[in-house]
Length: 332
Image 1 (tube, rainbow, N blue to C red):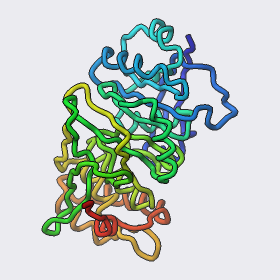
Image 2 (image 1 turned 45 degrees about the vertical axis):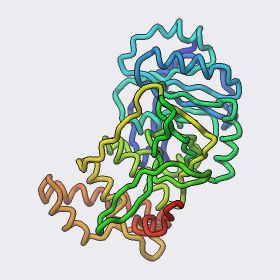
Image 3 (image 1 turned 30 degrees about the vertical axis):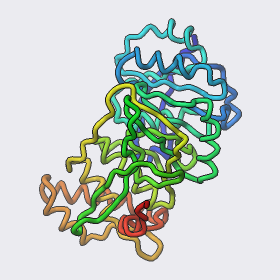
């Protein structure tokens, strides 16, 4: 059994500009010996996030262990009590990532994608089932030819009913809303990956700086990732042949405006694109302060911190949220 401690430092520099994970430790248990000289030692990686206990996880690993073309990473912890000596013998190709501290889902994905030794990484939950897993190689090729940051699957319930997992931005009575939609064709765009599930392009993901750890609510964290993808010139698309179903009941999303929404708003909706740069105008502060529940001093600090972030990434913007919404085509 291979065990070593991995120090997640600012080697993850490009991702960590958004998701600061300095001074975090995680343990890597098991996995095959790697050629660290090669940038990518695998064609494809699977990052398994645990949900529903070890039984779902072990069933999933039993199903995919035969995929010899894929590197398999399984994330657990903190406080995991499984016998990993037994686990690594049963699954010798699986690399278990044991977390020291609690993290947001987006942070876990940042960490896993950074650890992965492939250009494309499927992020999936243990209570999901991949249909036609031998077809994954072709789906990965489609992800590359589509030049997409994330290829999302056609999701179905445990009764094999389609979930409207594609999401479209619209304006209703001058208010921004997100509309769920069924995937009806290949390369259909979605605003974000539902339940974080999809095949991510590691290079594009790293340049985008991953998910923001400061946004705790998964809904607003995914929406922030999605808007940033489009505002920075990327896209998220679907593939009807990429079929995944839930074993349990599908998850629900909490889109209640909260502290996470405030940061999402400042980083995305409040940004204005002008003269080939993204900007957060000072005049936006007054509207933000009036709707904030933290008072003028704290809200000013929040605003200025985000304004500095926008300024530091100003030339990465290719459009603002208004352009993303106004140019989005509703599928027929």
